[in-house]
Length: 83
Image (tube, rainbow, N blue to C red; front, side, top):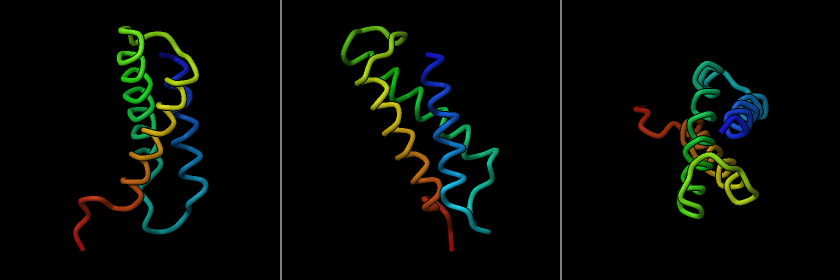
């Protein structure tokens, strides 16, 4: 589980650094979204494959990264933002 948290933290900061602009969400929002996405993706994949949420393998780490990127993309894209 700690590996998922570290991955989410790194992905949240990386997403923030790759796309800079005045209309971007603040760092205090991107990092928690990255953390939540990584934990949901990694633990969810572990539950599907193994029945427990604690272990880490290549599939769960990949899933953690993908779900984190998707949530960060939705956040950065402004889903739900009114114009």
